[in-house]
Image (cartoon, rainbow, N blue to C red; front, side):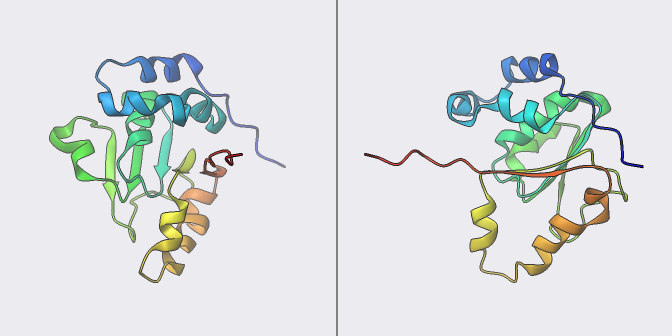
Length: 157
């Protein structure tokens, strides 16, 4: 029997996260190009979710995901710049190394990566194990879809 469809995104929680005055000004300036409301609604993010963010980098979406899932949810982020969570400013976010994400089997509600897949491809390391973990790890593939977000600028002309 197929699994029931996931509950829809909580657009109220997403709007509140985007409007939160505690967000860094540099992040707010990126909103027009990154379209966070549309992106997070598409992913179906809602309060209480467990989100795995693969290659979080500077943490633009980490910040938003943290605020949307709230205190009853959590975000596990690989390759997250430490400054984003310094001084416990996002207490429901855990930075995880590439080889141990600390997620129990079938525990992630959303698996997310945005604007960085090219970085994984360009890594000067054996990326096979990293990509295999991201796609096939049982903590991720059990009950969620995995999304990769990549924007492309319109061609000039």
